[in-house]
Structure formats: structure tokens, C-alpha cells
Image 1 (cartoon, rainbow, N blue to C red):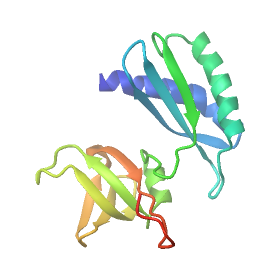
Image 2: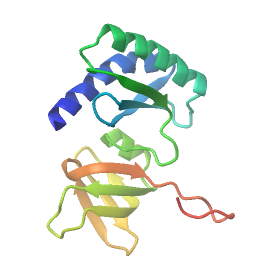
Image 3: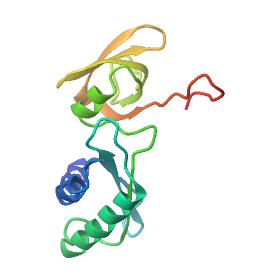
Image 4: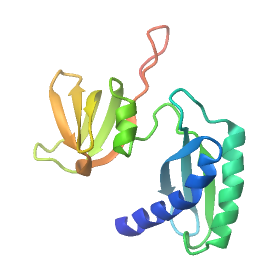
Length: 168
């Protein structure tokens, strides 16, 4: 199942990537939820520029064009599905080494495959990210090196500033 999902994700990225690129954007992530017949496919777009943003008009344009491509390439997603195209939001997913490198120094929340110590969740500040591993300084001060292959899910953990909001 994971292989099938990964293949579908790759096919969607190959269709959506050029559409996003035309608008100065990139496909950050593709996410699936639901079951056959009521499946939702979410495409997260991000600006290819350091401090750029994603406008709702960009999402709508990519959604329309991608919907047309998926109709023509009906072998990519079988059955009925709902397509959503949006920006990743504050707690953006982190999937590729380049995603992690962009947020070094920020707080992250990582879900791991089962580890030797039995812990599956790590939260803390991302100290370093290279092509093979990341290093997270956990809230208690311990430093943890994590291989990308052990990461099931990772997100930036946006923290509101002290001016009246709490941590997300």
C-alpha cells in the first residue's frame, strides 16, 4: 500500500510540479485521506522564493489545471476524489532534506517509526539538517540525531510570540 501511495504521489507531483513552477511555486507535499469513493487529495504549494507566499488565485489556477490533467490521466487516481490545493499553513509538513534545511533553528514535531527506546514523538528545535540526518535539540536539552528513513511524519511547529498567544 505504501508503495502504491508513493507512486501515486510521484505521479501527481510530476503533473502538478510544472503547473506550480509556472507561478513561481513548488509542490511541497501531497497528502491523501479517506477511502475509495470519498478520497481527498491535498496538494500543498509553497513559494520557491525565501519569503514569498502563495495567493489563493495561485491555488485556484493550479487546482483547475491539475484537475483537467487528472481527468485526462485517469490512471493516476482511480475512482472519485476531491482535489484540494492550498498553502501548507503555519505547521507546514517537512518531507525532503531541503524542507528541513529551510527551517533550521525553528521548532519541529517529528513522528518516528518505532525506535529502540519506544518513543515515537520528538519535539524541539531543529539544530542541523543534511542529506542523511537531522539533529533535534529536545525541550529537555537532549540532542537527538534522526535519519530521514526513520521519520513517518514531520511538521514545523509554529510558535506564536509572547505578545498574547500560546504555542500552537
